[in-house]
Length: 332
Image 1 (cartoon, rainbow, N blue to C red):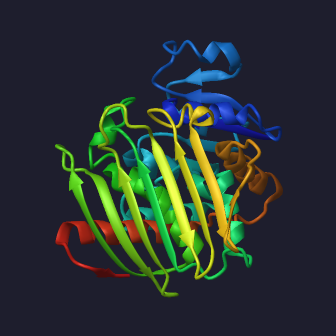
Image 2: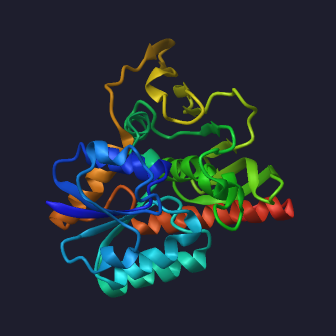
């Protein structure tokens, strides 16, 4: 049984907390949040302690794992402190906003011989797990082209998302999902080219990226946090081979909170037939966090989202950022 100290109780912090309630091999025993005494949801289902001081978690010998659900610009400081305290770490994506910061984080984790897991959650999303499995079989082997998009309104639950120095904008907060997944699907990138728009604060909040991979496959990936009010949060991916295609489209509410009630279409095209793919209900955050906890509990390697992949995805994002700023194609 792993004991968890959760840091941050915003939208994603609550999402993690709810997911942990369904995972048998762990428990959240303490939460560090500035919302102490102000959140009416906590007393209803959470029986652990609430603290304001992060050091209280680090000095608690009963806590095995620190789960960091804080704004991105705080990640490095909190991860390194947790690593120095000998705690294993789960951190919400993105890990950080620069490769230099990522290298410092990895160095601290390795030095202290602790494990770090980063929540690039699409690798654990049930439909995307199917896409990945199809790509490893004759159903969708040798993908030639991928088109992915993730479109939503500006986040309303916190103002820090709009600040490029704190969140990295839609480029790092939203685009990262599909950029990471197409890398997971197609391998290393050769060339990127991107166009986009910035918000009033200077953050890239609508980005369209073309990627050419070293295996000669190609992808177009779009992300937006500037869709108009009322536009449903939408994510989609189409993958094509010479003969076959697989297409996923999901449109939900303002964010992913009403995803089970949204429009969903998942279809495989092969042999001149259109075959809907039926999916059992599954929670990607439960899948992700259960996997991370299991790796720690059993001291097994993280083969789904190893740190090398996390850093490489960050390098792709920095190349996209370079292309956006310069208007040029960037070779990885």
